[in-house]
Length: 391
Image (cartoon, rainbow, N blue to C red; front, side, top):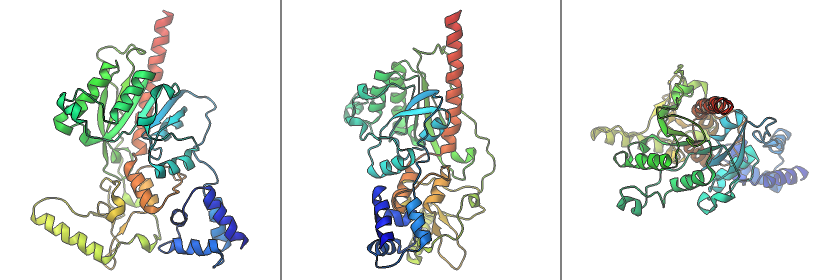
């Protein structure tokens, strides 16, 4: 009974449900029932599982205090912190985080340990600490009717407005924004043009590129738009300044490099669901469109883009298990790897929540490459500014 009390207390300390803990430690299809019986003392938990629960999330892997802080940044629409990791690696200190989703907050808190502010629309810009770099993977939310009537000259009613008002008030030296690649062409390009015009009006340079995750070492064909800007009031950029986005090395990738072995049977989809996938694919094929499930194996170079809806049926990325079995979905850890998250990143939510979180997140290696270029550019411009002042 002592073990039962200990494991329940540990789970509650972490703020995790039985389902979340069962999925996190890999208990399988009936995991929540098994864990519940352990906590009630109906069944004796073995020492290995007990130790696994007691040591789960014992350390906060990214709660690292920088000895030599090189710059400060804020993490808006933070999700689970995929954009934060590379900037922290480069000596940055996160001084403010905003994320409204409670489950994403849980994952972020267990990995980073910081206080997380909620809905950014409810936070006054003057209450945000001073910082150097603004990071934001903001949702691509349709602009307001007011904006439509004004030819997209108004950003009120959109989440971009919150980025705009914070930049206007705090004047960071630089920003990085991330979004779906369709943002560039949304409403015949007018949506991006409004974003660009509003940032330029605040006297920032604005450059963008669409980068692909598989060019940066992860086996996923994920394309996203990245928008980078620097404060023209702080830096003497010149009219012809252009931020140099990184070019991926485009080394060959292989899906098998991120797949787990001996995957639990709960990730195998039912024959009924697979038959439905095949039927719908045939229907789409007759209509001459490319919709339908996608099957991959360990020798595939890369997968489709994993999305937040992956938990529903896994149709965009299914792993072939041979002719004698229906395919399986990726595991949450495989999704983390597909996005380039480090192995020590803790997943403290249920499988379905994890799928949503990684589907909504970013390809960390792409962010890492951009971050290096941004910080190097800032350091170079700082030297130029110092030299100019001394002259």
